[in-house]
Length: 206
Image 1 (cartoon, rainbow, N blue to C red):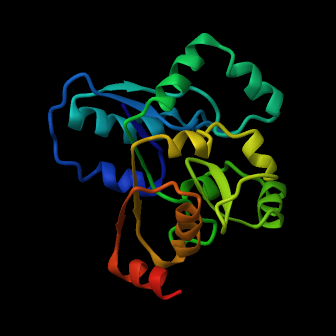
Image 2 (image 1 turned 180 degrees about the vertical axis):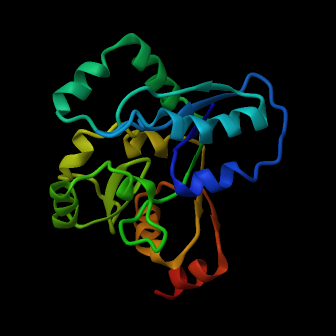
């Protein structure tokens, strides 16, 4: 089972896959893609479908918004059998593939520019000291997530779920993502890191 997060970097990666036939493989979407303007399904599906086709894997979409308006709504949805099955798949992943999102990136992460967050939510993230996200789960520079209200409404997997996944592959490009990457490393989210040389030098030199 491979869990894949949608986003600008994963979109780029999905366009350069080398096809490799696998057996009994499944791909599960890590976080919802809908917002107040769109269901987001077309965008996320296009990315994940490329992975599915390249690896001959069954695709399981996650048909929920990126953020619920009310934490109680998420709690209710998570009791639905269909969604519980997807959450269980996420909990049993062999591989997770993602990038790190950053509100400060030179190429802005899709969640920060795609109509997913309003001004009040941006302010709340700033006030909470957020430096980035993985699959729209936000964290601080020290990797902590407690006390970040938007995470109570988000649909990405809890970071504890990611940490249980044996292989956690992160792809990062651009020095403006260094702070977000450092936070993800502090949170113990990454086992395998693909990074450009300039960003790597900035990471070890900062």
